[in-house]
Image 1 (cartoon, rainbow, N blue to C red):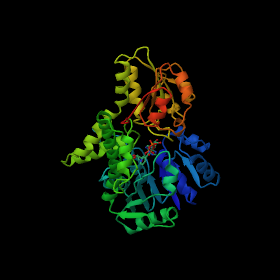
Image 2 (image 1 turned 30 degrees about the horizontal axis):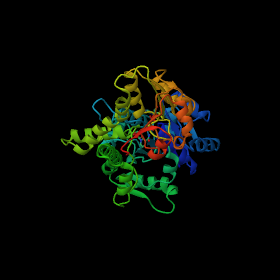
Image 3 (image 1 turned 90 degrees about the vertical axis):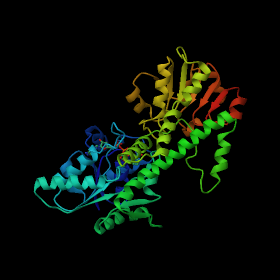
Image 4 (image 1 turned 30 degrees about the vertical axis):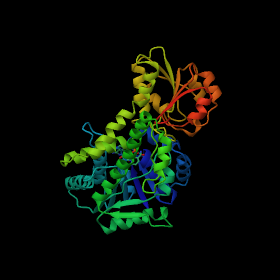
Length: 438
Ligand code: NAD
């Protein structure tokens, strides 16, 4: 099938690459010429495990191409996936300008039937706005052409995006016309050969499903963070509590890890956008409002621990940070808790040296030279007063603690991800603090 993907970021590029892997003829559009030039050279602008080889293999086979030419991209695909950003507006609502611009571009150039697929995360009612934008543009052109609008939210996780796309838990298709549903089913059929995992529903329910999923996950995180903070004052160990509740199949083990708060390009903005949608409809989502407040507070948790040990004024103190990305296996720095932590440390006069296996380049784009960047975990420790663990990269899990101790000025580890066993670390002579651990 001929497919166009509009927006070649984390979601668009993975979507385009994975669809081409199953034999589709895919053209990816982006308005950022730098990104498209890189992709045309076979370079991947983001870090995503496994993506580079799929892109290169399918580009070499001629099934995956990249362009900045809107007319060419509209002419190419019967199916036009919109996978552009939907960042938060000033009031917290999702900013739909990129989605609607993409829709209008399709309408300006289309000459035959198109299925316009909203893959971006968009509030309930967006499909209607997309339909309206296309109708208006077609009317301006004085033409009447058939098209369908489908909601097909994406559930991939950065760091495991290719695997998630290739082996989806479910494929949500919100549509109300049979022609579009049939096309969507045939696109996703190769991704679900053993079980039909497609959930066809009305458009509004599909749009809400995406927000509901992210809101639920964010809620679990904030719940566990608050419980961990409580465990600390009550003298309980959240790690034991986590196992104790996770064993209940109604609860399960996933997403019960306390830490320094959720970040990334999705949870913060999607929680905000859902609260905003509710407000616009005269409702307050009290649980979710609290989830967001708890998360904002949790981002400061590590800093509070630092201040409790070293005092409010941190001039002359240096801190080693392990991890900058909002989670492991990605270079995405959007809304990363590390940014808040670094800001607070610098504000109090400290200096920071950070190491991240892949996100340093992206971090430098945001932070510039306000901090130092090490090229190895150990390199960050030299002369630091404490090690702060911010992202749970696997390679941080079993360090040479003797070396860590020798490099640090003081044997202090403040672990924002509960990576280490407190007994072990203390046996090495560290002063160890974590989130909700005894
Ligand atoms: P991104 O910022 O990485 O990529 C968006 C791309 O769209 C950019 O490269 C931008 O240049 C391009 N773009 C903007 N307007 C355009 C236009 N009119 N035509 C062509 N290209 C245009 O964003 P992302 O992380 O891929 O997220 C995209 C959407 O998917 C968002 O709505 C997000 O909430 C949702 N989503 C993201 C994830 C994730 O893990 N990143 C997961 C599920 C859903």
